[in-house]
Length: 117
Image (cartoon, rainbow, N blue to C red; front, side, top):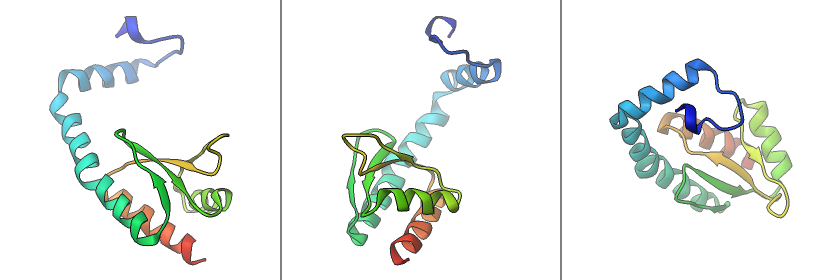
């Protein structure tokens, strides 16, 4: 791990956690399967039903294109959901990470309130 740390300091706890994950891949592999097999299809179905444009990926995140990205990000932040507004040339989107189903359900509930506001 010391060889691949890179130019930024990583604290000892993070290094130990990474080592534990590398030594026990079944835990994180189970989480990846959950995100990709349950959370991702659920949020894609939600956006399709709500007619919100999104850009899916093979990774654990997606880009979402609401009608007003700044207002959407502000509303989500006020409701303690953090997303990342993107920069040009994709500044009309925000990046959201896939999470567990209870967390994704909370996102969908809050985003529905945003859409209805």
